[in-house]
Structures are given as structure tokens and as C-alpha cells.
Image (cartoon, rainbow, N blue to C red; front, side, top):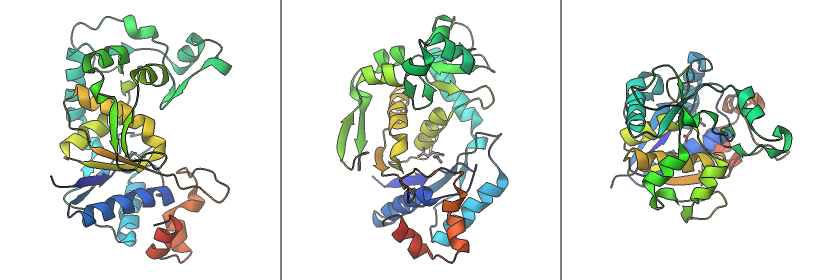
Length: 285
Ligand code: GLU
């Protein structure tokens, strides 16, 4: 099996040290394995994606000395593939349209200040629209949620495993995410947003399968999202890559770096005279 990995940034801000860690690790693993390192621009969020951030990604990667194989995949060109995956899930009766606003969701939850369970995408959905009829054609312009309980009944236990090279706490091997945790801690996630026609989770799973990705290198902040991705791969008959969740790069005060932390952007270090070798050292490589 040829080793295929990818770096999949969203062009919504500057790349920071955390991105550098993901990209360098994935790149070096691919080169060491004689495999492929792909680049995918995750620009489904049309309101936030900017061409100048995309240009900055190419510039930073080139400066870091990372070259990718084959053409760049752009998610904004992949809507038909996402809609086909959604139609498959709709035909299986696993999606339902949701009209709840964020406020509806919070007021449907008990004691919002204390009782809200936060999943990877925010408060776990209370299921208000789950009873909406799912017969007929898939609505074209609606928020679509995954009926997690039905999805898990369909796939059984086997696929709640995530194979990891490096787990969130540095462990490796197989990690089991119990179905009860997916139901209570993740719930009916949104698979199509009205403004996008898809969602991060659906797009990533569809694209990793289309690109033949065998290894995903990502930060440990996406560990819970990976559990969702494993569920979707099982439902869509997509192969399961091996996941490497790496530690998060934090600033001197121990705070996680966010895209808006421009001070930690690669281009800021570049402007201050750092070399690519300095960046590798800074992220502990
Ligand atoms: N585009 C996402 C990001 O920049 C996703 C990465 C992934 O799925 O591994 O955080």
C-alpha cells in the first residue's frame, strides 16, 4: 500500500506554528515512506475564505521547503461529490432537515448555563427536528443533520475504532470511542449547512476517500471530529485512514494558538528573520 497523506488548511487566516507542525510532520512522513504528500484547500466557508490567505499558504509552504504531489484539490469545486454523499445518506434515512436556530437549540436544552454538553461543533443538539418526515427527495437548500442513533444502529460496533499512529496523549494503537459517547457527547451533527451545501465533516471524509488518503496527520483538537469521520466512513463505505493526532502547539503562556493569533503566524517569524530550521525547532521537530 502506498502511503498517502495530506495537508488541508482553510484559507481563513495566516498559517501558524500548529499548521507548520501538521504540514512538516505529514510531509516528512510521506517522504520517509516514499509516499505522497497532497495539498487540499478547504475553502467551503465562502464567507471566510480569502484568495489572499490561499496565496499566503502557498508562500509559507514553499518557504518551509515543503513540496506537494499532484494538483491541489479545492473543496469549493467539489460540491457535486458532497451532494452525492449526502443523497446516499438521505436515501438510507439517516439525515433530517433542521430549522432550529442557535437560540432555539439553547432554549430547548435544560438549564443552558450549566447543563449544556459541548460537542466538537458546539452544544449537542437536543433532537427537536428529528421527527421531521424524511420521505421524498432530499431538500436542496436545508440544514441536514445526521441521525446519530440510527447511524450507529446501522454500522454496529466495529467502526467505533480509530486507528492511530500517535494518540491525543501520545499513545498509539486502537482507540475505541464508545457509542454512548458519540450519542451523548457528539449527537446529531450538521452534515450540510444551508450556506455551504456541505459541512467540514462531510467534505473531509469525501475528499480523503477521493484522494486515497491512507494517513491523516492533525492536531489533537480534532480528535472528537475524527470519531465523527469514522462513523461517516463506515456509512459511506469509505476506507479508514490511520490517524495521527499530534500535540497542540501552545504559546509561552500555555494558550492554544488560534488563527487570529497573528503574532504566532509563520509569516511573522519569517519577517523577523527566522529560518525554516528555526520553525522546525520551535515546534519541537
Ligand atoms: N481545514 C481544517 C483545518 O485547517 C482541517 C484539517 C483536517 O481535517 O485535518 O483545521
